[in-house]
Length: 114
Image (cartoon, rainbow, N blue to C red):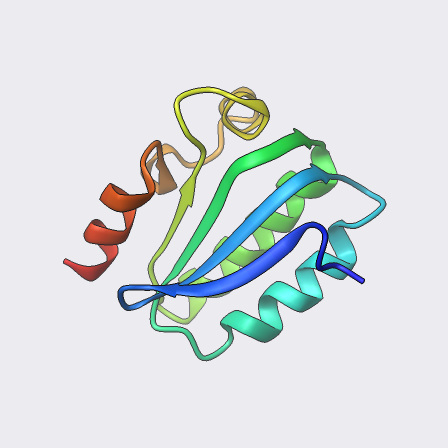
């Protein structure tokens, strides 16, 4: 059901979550459940948002909840937003934690592995 918006793989020591398309009220709850299920045992998490074409407040809340859960467990996370695009613009407008944002997937993975 959520396969059109999310896929999972490994990148170094991190669980890589790739999101694409529109992330909004219609799918954020289901995506959250799937992402949490796949990242519960991860040592680190990379969320690639570069293919997200729209991110509304429900999507921002979803990311905030995931970050909060990982912070509580002491697990590092990076959100890859690219140089520009829907996710980068929305998260900047919302004053999302800039220490978690990365523009390059390879660099973000290296930081988590480092």
